[in-house]
Amino acid sequence: MGIDPVLSGVPETALWTLFHRTSEARHPRTVLPDPVGVALADRLDFPFAARFGRGFPHQAQTIALRSRCFDDEIRAFLADRPDATVVALGEGLETTFWRVDNGRVRWLSVDLPDSAALRTRLLPAEDRVRVHAGSALDGSWMDEVDPAHGVIITAQGLLMYLPPADAEALIVACAERFPGAWFVFDAVTPLVDRQLVVSAGGSSGYRPPPLRWFVAARDLPRLRTLSPAIRGVREVRSRSGRGVAGWVAARLRFVPVLGRQRPMVVRLTFGGDGR
Ligand SMILES: C[S@@+](CC[C@H](N)C(=O)[O-])C[C@H]1O[C@@H](n2cnc3c(N)ncnc32)[C@H](O)[C@@H]1O
Image 1 (cartoon, rainbow, N blue to C red):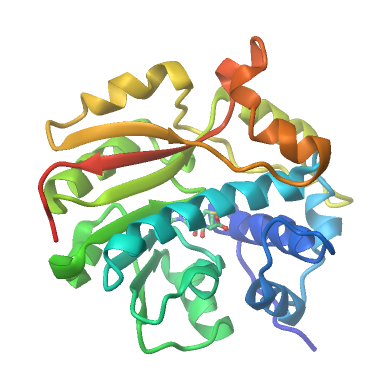
Image 2: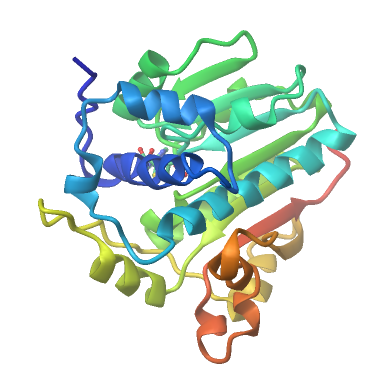
């Protein structure tokens, strides 16, 4: 008998991303090998396809390509700072650590109490990985971060669920607390919100929680003005994936009209040396 994850609302969306990421990981020519994620999904007693439906065409690969952008950013940061700390806000059941571990990185996973408890129960314990049970919005997790060897903060699939003022206050708080850090997050537009609602829902009639914070490509310069501590803002370019869908996914910015509404992965760099 598997483990019933018992999550609802925004925390349940971690099962939705796990489902798509591991569906992609099971493909023989996957863009994101993820054996730890697949083993985790297999332990759960959860009707993924019946609950969530199959989604829009190539959704699994699209979600995996998003994760691969985060992996690439972390690897790039660690290439210069191998002993850095990765802080993964709203990490859910992501298994990034096992994909990018260089044997030295330290990891702090931050999620709401029920999600953090599930993560601790299901994923292997590691000496260099800690789990903080609490909201990313109450800054207490910051006291657990040793900035001595560099800090990279990720917020994958998190900020769009927050009220805009909270999402932006979190970015500013990180910028002011962690000079020299990178902050990598994904952003969506109202078009993505509509697409998710239309494509979601298996036999259960699943309705995803509403998205609240939207950032389109034209908004990127405004992010730079949120705090003087934010020195750089740039879109992270995806590498091509598999087949035509994977090729197009990496080139959405060139698609007329729709390209302006594309989902993005964004890297902010914070001022100061910070090492
Ligand atoms: C879409 S899931 C993303 C999970 C994971 N990052 C991924 O990409 O698979 C959203 C995650 O954000 C978490 N979350 C929502 N609000 C949060 C908050 N205020 N602080 C920390 N985590 C939060 C949820 O519990 C859930 O794990």
